[in-house]
Amino acid sequence: MSEIKKLAMRRAAGEQLPLAFNHDAALGREDLLVSDRQAAAIAIIDAWPTWPSPVVILAGPPGSGKSHLTDIWRSLSGARDIVPVSGSDAAELAAQGPVVFEDADRTEFSDTELFHVINSVRENATGLLMTSRGWPLSWPVALPDLRSRLKAATTVEIGEPDEQLLAQLVFKLFADRQLIVDDRIIDYIVRRMERSFAAAQRVVEAIDRLAMARQTRISRSVAAEVLNTLYDSQLDEGMS
Image 1 (tube, rainbow, N blue to C red):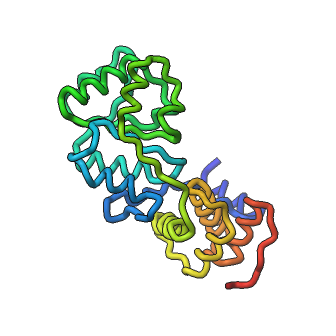
Image 2 (cartoon, rainbow, N blue to C red):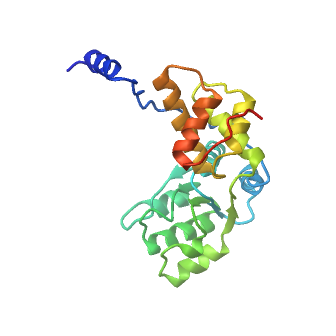
Image 3 (cartoon, rainbow, N blue to C red):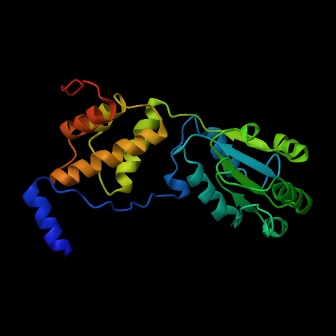
C-alpha cells in the first residue's frame, strides 16, 4: 500500500498521526544553557586543557547536558571515542591523544582495559572524559586498582534543573524543532510538569506530536491535554 493511500486512510479514520521526525539539537558552545546546576560542569569543560586531573567524569541524570558538553569538549580537544573492552585499542588511542568514554555506567567495559586507559592518559598527559548517570562508586568495578584510579578522578555532578533552567530547556527543545512558543505557554508547562531533564524532553515531544496531528499551533489547551495525559492530573484552565 502506498504512503499516500495510508495517509488517506488515516484521515478518513480520524486524526492523522505525525511522522516521528528526528530533530537535531543545537550543540554549539553558544547553545549551552547555563545555570547553577550546570556551572561546575561547564567550568571544567571550559578549563581544558588545564584540568585539575587528567581524568574527568560528568555525572548527571538523562538529558542533563552530558552529551552536549562532551560534544563541546570533542571540538576543543580533538578527542576520539573509545569503549575499553578486552582486545580494543583504547589504551593505545589514549596514549596518542584525548579520548571520550560515554555512558560508562551503562556500557560493558573491561576493568583491566579501563585501568590501562587511565594509566596511558596519566603517563602521556592526554585526557579522558567519561560520562555517567551515577557516581563512579556505583559502577560495577571489581579491580581495586581501578577503583583507586576512579577515586582520584575529578567527578562533577549535574543536578536536576531549577524552574528557570527548565524554562530555558523547554524553550530550546521547541526551538530545536523550529518552533517558537509563547513565553506564557512555556511558563504554564514548566509549573505543571515533573522537574527533570528527561520529563522536559517527553513533554515537548508529546506536545509537538499532538499539535502536528491536529494541524494546529501549540496552544495552552494542547499543552494542558498532553500534561493531563502524562500526569493524570486536573489542570487549571486559566492562563496565569
